[in-house]
Amino acid sequence: MQNNSMLKRTATWKLGLTIILCCVVDWSYLSGTAIEKIGYWAPLAWFITIFAMVTICYSCMEILMMFPNKSGGLATCIIEGYKKRSPLFAVISQWGYVTGWGLASGAIAAFASYFIQYFIPFPDEYLNYVAIAIISVVCCINLASVDLIEKIQKLIYVLFALTIILLVGAVIKLPLLSQDFSGIELNSGESTVAIFLSACFVVGWSAASIEAVLTFIGEYKDPEKDTKLALSSGMIVMFVFTFALCSAMTWYLPLDVVLSNPYTPLLPLAEAVYGPLFATIYGICLVVGLIIATNACLLPASRVLFTASESGLMPKCFTKLNKNKIPYVAVISIFLVNVLFLITTGGEQPTFLVVAGGMSYFLMVALAGCSVLVMRKDFPDADRPHRTPTIIAYLAAISGVFYLVMLIVGTAPYGFKTIAYGLFATLIALPLYWYRIYVEDKQQGIVLEQTDLDTSS
Image (cartoon, rainbow, N blue to C red):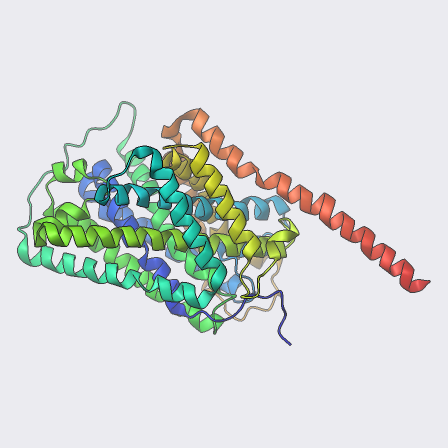
């Protein structure tokens, strides 16, 4: 008999791949930002951050295959890997995952509203309402079924195909620029290494998204096969196309064009290759891609919150499933937080996303990098259906340290007040955890004790 508390296994590895393809949008505006910071070194920043994240993901496969019914991704690795340590490792890490991906859905919806305003002008005061409408539709889709989600996510293939056409056209039609990026000025007191790491922090947000494919292991039809296929195909796509897009912007667009359009440099590139009509069509597809990316963020965040609750780290309500086996309380809760966020923070969503989401999320990634080595030490005799090569496990630990360094360097420019705000957002996890332990679990203990007494009498 199937356990009614389990998620429904209807997804395939293609769902994981479409989540990665949603990063086409991120590759566009994050590459422009990276070029603005470090010029022709931007492709290297992408390569390093993706390599570090892929290493961590492949290392964590060892733990994930031990728990194929837990859809928590890297957060599950910390929950299980640090089980003999303080539970705060798991609490802060899983909450970092939820805030990182969960708040990103609202921020991307807000970003999509700016793109929509570009094509359909409307007053600025309606921007947040458009974003709320977008995330409301996405929430309803999430509550329907994983099958529907997978079908809608496939729309991203259109944007991906147009991106390939754009890159091929740039190579054929545009002359290779010979421009000097070495004139980028360093701010007083900042070193070249610090600026490079800050660029890594910017692109690292998208590079880390490859681990989202791991959060669906509890919903893949074949957990081992689908997880490995999703991760391998996602890795290839991330490496090839982030490098290709960033290089195309660097080689075929004048620096002043990139600096004038740091978030949408692909639009002037599209116009230079195929003209304004293609640029308009491509821009509309980018809007659709942003809406799909909003869904791609809400998906893993809700699954991790579900698994955290199942593991005894969050209130029990988040384990509730609807008739379609969707963790509806988790989905609706993240949706409501984003609505509140969009209403109260005005135009500051990106800042909050980078700091509040980035701080806790990158901390989770750093801890996940060491989780396999920690678990091998604490549980040496545990049954491991899949064993990661030791060299990869150590490389993952080094990659985790790298993400921790990026966290420190990347958040420093925001100042003490903004960092404190991000820490506050991270520490919200503690009262939720204490409520689960000292209220819900304690009450359950009392009920069980009374049940035993009734049985004995």
